[in-house]
Image (cartoon, rainbow, N blue to C red):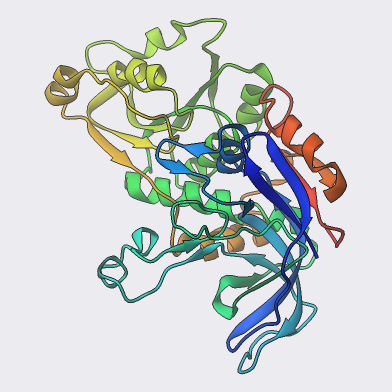
Length: 347
């Protein structure tokens, strides 16, 4: 079977990869759709990020959905032919962090398409994949597998919203309107945020953000001081979701937070210098948000019901043999939000 394998920066190949039969408590899934994530782009463009580097060829992909092909011994409660979203996260359940309820920080985590461990954990951009039964979640009739593949990024955003605490009646700033930023807007709106301001450098991304829940949109490339109206002695925002990964964006937004405001950092941006005096005097709470846990099942339910409708984010689908074109488009934030790869099944 074929898979999408990254060997080094800008060295992406469609290759034969090993196919396996499902073991006990596993299911074999014929992959339909895979979404290109920011981390996939980091591996493709740069060979990784910070200290997480490619040390061997790796199959990319963790935003995936497909159709169950076969069941392993002992599997029940699901049948071959079922359309499913696949949770790429596989915590051990037994380490110190898992026992403490921090399963997304599992010491022995096996997360698809990740070079954090060596040997690397191979990803889901392949025609067939075996996973644990509890990693698959049925997709509702009428919902495409392209939509279902969005469960993973939505779960990331649901986790960030949960980490921010209650949003009912709160004013929210979202910086960066890529897929994660826009899904965060949708999740924050669903959680009851009273007002949402979104910033980006691309008009197309901002237009989509406005359509999907942002009350005000600001192009900070055209108007670098566009947030000035939201500053003042007391600030404007209770919560800032930072999804751009740009250090200057984080620093520039801090004066616009209210006292005891919360910064939820989703974007990866390396080392950042911060105005500590402002953080101390306003008692700003800076929180990281990493992946997800139980939020994946919640994300599938929200997509199945279309309470959060991800269809407007889906920019383009490319067949497997045009994967390099797919990555080129995904790299152009002015033209695409979410680019997906089709592996030949129902999308």
